[in-house]
Image (cartoon, rainbow, N blue to C red):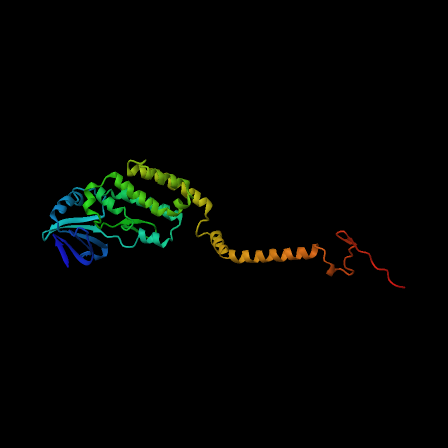
Length: 293
């Protein structure tokens, strides 16, 4: 299916989903004239009441020019269409389930999330949508992009700063679950506690506080952990693989050494030429019988 508006043409490739309310269909699409530019999420809004509300946050005249993820919006065939850039790749949820990110990488991902939301300067309703681990895409270089699937469209008009902070709080607990559970990082624990207690009034305050946490924890991590890629780090990784074998050899050596020590130092009648003569055992006196001539 091709959607046309003025000089724009979008080919619908597949359907992503229909929202819970049933008023918006989401499609994966490409620009017919510029297929090489990537994929798009096309939201087809059938409810005109929702469309009127969305116009205020989905037209180039009403949003910041830095919100580049919003590609276009227009009316066609009695429906309202919103075109977003579509981010391909592994979601943050999938990445965390794989469990392959070390602490430094997770610190960087959270920093990149903050940087990207301020760089895009998107309306609060879409920021609320973007701060879901299912909608955050993480690439191989730990760069972050967002998808917009109108998951909670009915709540868009009620979103406040507090809801955004709650979303950030949830991401912090997801990203640093290991450290918070083991209480291995005082800085991350204090940051999470401050989020719980609502110490930050605005996202920017939260970002500034996190940036300080990031620098401190990263510095401590670099002091504790060898840097990947260096020769001695690779040697250390290989050495760790031999630890079970080394422990077994050392344990065996200890047992053998102990046995030799005991055999060498403890008196043993069987090892002497004449044995050991006892003149008395307890209160019993032993007398040798004289030999007969």
